Length: 65
Image 1 (tube, rainbow, N blue to C red):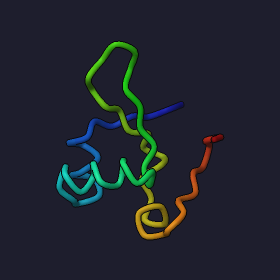
Image 2 (image 1 turned 180 degrees about the vertical axis):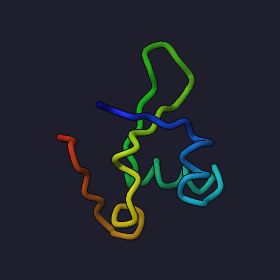
Image 3 (image 1 turned 45 degrees about the vertical axis):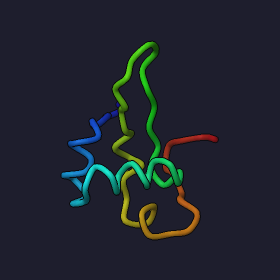
Image 4 (image 1 turned 180 degrees about the horizontal axis):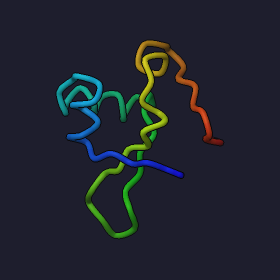
């Protein structure tokens, strides 16, 4: 089952600001999407790992590119 977090929840979960989380998103370190026609960003909880945040090339479990 997929679990999604809001930007605020994800930032609290990893202990960073929302701006830093946005940087991680733009760098491709965290997987996220916008639901059709929405403004809200939902983040895949499986993509938030210490390895993804620190490595130059993130590795995603359960995702295909």
